[in-house]
Length: 149
Length: 149
DNA sequence: AAACTCTCTAAAGCCACTTCAGGGTCAAGC
DNA sequence: GCTTGACCCTGAAGTGGCTTTAGAGAGTTT
Image 1 (spheres, helix red, strand yellow):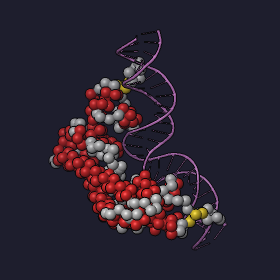
Image 2 (cartoon, helix red, strand yellow):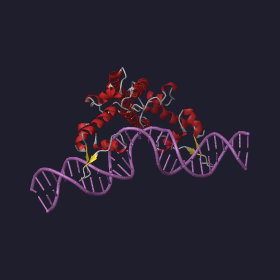
Image 3 (cartoon, helix red, strand yellow):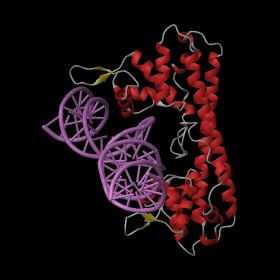
Image 4 (cartoon, rainbow over the protein chains, first blue to last red):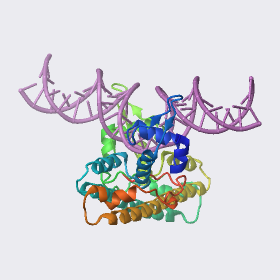
């Protein structure tokens, strides 16, 4: 299977696959000796499926590498694996709480301007001109699950 | 006021302030003629307060620039301002919904391994080896509020 | 043979900063 | 007057997880 077909199968771009190979998230593909095209077999598909599933769950590359490493320790307990998932769940749930706090602040701000007038008197602008309450800025070290855009 | 004092006042780093100036998110500071140090007055403080408040609400630089532009149109209605906030609220709430769906998937996955055994038989690994259900990958164009870490 | 699609590589761009390297400035204490 | 340490300066590179661009070779269709 060539890279384009694999990309379609896994609902990602060929660039993403090449990028994963480059950074070592998936093993190097086999190359066609004539034209240097990448070729993939079942084992490659499985490895990429795993990575894409992890990414769809918003795991970082580092977390994925940890999972791959833990899984490779044959015969070992899967305690390490559980730990990675538990930690990541913490990342996600703390990010949800952060964003919910943010949403509330934004809704409160929005209510300052229910009847649009001139922008000089806009309650939103007035609200934004005042500093934020400290408590909102939640500890950013907890989660790698960032951003909102 | 020098940059270090301003940074403390606004709970950010001096590097961030210099960066904002560089990309034009805040106007250039006044410079001390002797040593080229940046100096800030009340007007600068207000502008940076506005930007930091917007950023604390997870607005993108682009959104902040839109707000600044809208506000500068004196005499105009604040309809544009409302629109930016409404749009951003959409970003945030759709990201919350995404992350909640993600959290559920992760919890379901976690339940596959309640009694840790060998990692070969770990239900989490088995779960990650299967492709994701398409419906999870929500339209990523909606929100700039991304990530989880 | 031309046109179109697929593949390749290396490098740059994105966002919102942070970090680094290598300096200059200034006040306090010896 | 000299050192120490805190602060300031600039420009460039690094972060993560890709995406985009530029330029070129390979393969298929007309």
